[in-house]
Amino acid sequence: MPKTYTFIPALSDDEIADIQLNGLKKTLRQALNSPQYQSILAPADVQPDDIKSLDDLRKLPTTDVEDLRRGYPLPLLSVPERDVVRIHASSGTTGKRKILSYTKNDTETLALQMARCFELAGLTRDDRLQAAVGYGLWTAGAAFQSGSEKIGMLTIPVGPGNLEMHLQLLQDLHATCFGATASMALLLAEEVERLDILDKISLTRMICGSETRSQKMTEAIESKLGLKGCYNIAGMTEMYGPGTAIDCDCHEGLHYWADLFIIEFLNPETLEPVPDGEVGEMVVTSLCKEAVPLIRYRTHDLSRHIPKKCSCGLNMPMHDCILGRSDDMIVYRGVNIYPGQLSDVIARYPELGGEYQVELTRDDHSVDHMTLTVERSQGFSHDGDEALASTLSLDLHKSILARIEVKIVDYTALPRTFSKAKRIVDKRY
Image 1 (cartoon, rainbow, N blue to C red):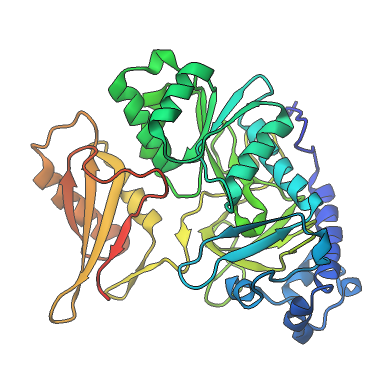
Image 2: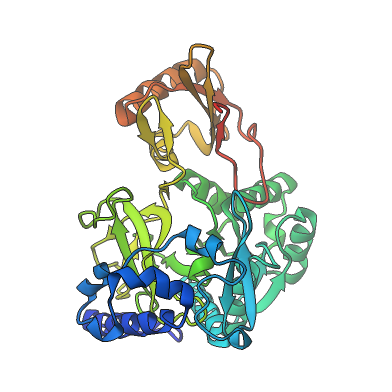
């Protein structure tokens, strides 16, 4: 018998399809309250009553981050301003921040999707959560705290950084779960090992989000902290925040809440669906978002639908971890490379750790060069570095069709960070 949950509904495929069809109509109706959305949707000339099946979703246009920037300060707002109870924002690489509005119901849905993630990770009200995620305008702090409190866990809202404070509170308050970026989690794990205080803390689970992490990075975090599980969580500000998906103990993919979102996987150039199971850009339509509903919103995150049913028995669909971003693709000597491809090749070598950095340069003859610096695994000798670097370089050439110079460095030689690790350094421009 599949496990029953408090916050995760038990839905059949037909029930999910019905929720999605009704939710799509509701979302289109809600969006048409926004003058900005009206202008975006006008060329399609599709009304809510014209939606007869989920296939009709493709009649609607896609939306993008530029729509949020154009509508600043309250873009795509589909409710009266007096109904907005909170805003969150995420930073952009250029220009003003992306601001997203929330109604009271929206904030409750944010808490719900996070509570579902915690529950699927095996947490109960008897656990204690220590949050090392960003508070303030960012969604992460509010999401982790509200989801934790919805379950009834004791919540310790520390925020990122402050490693000394985190270590002290872990020993004093005995949190059983830690929420952070993978980089912060690794930094914490290495410090716990260095100080030899594992027997003084009570962590059993780690929830990591905000950045891609390799399997080797996960294994390092789990082993150094003696965890029962380390879970990947997905999400973004436009989709309420973190908590849209998480992997379960089977780790066969990230379950996403199909009663809250429709996710398409499209070719980022043609915007046509990719074959089931192949990598595409995740394009999201919300089903109950009020203040800023999403209609075919291009996340630019690359992943793939996992068509199989999970061994855990939960009938919520799965997607793979985020493999990269369609707008962060490395174009090197005519070859398109995603960071996830590099991680996959590095993972084949037990002598190598999970931390790496790519540097791109251009010489005086306008020829591009790529150098991949990879940390050696903890406990391995440097004696074979030269041969290992040569072997990895050949493997990368076969796998990615690009010639990449490889350097092997000591464990912990690359910079550690409380936030997202900077893996790509492009000096060509």
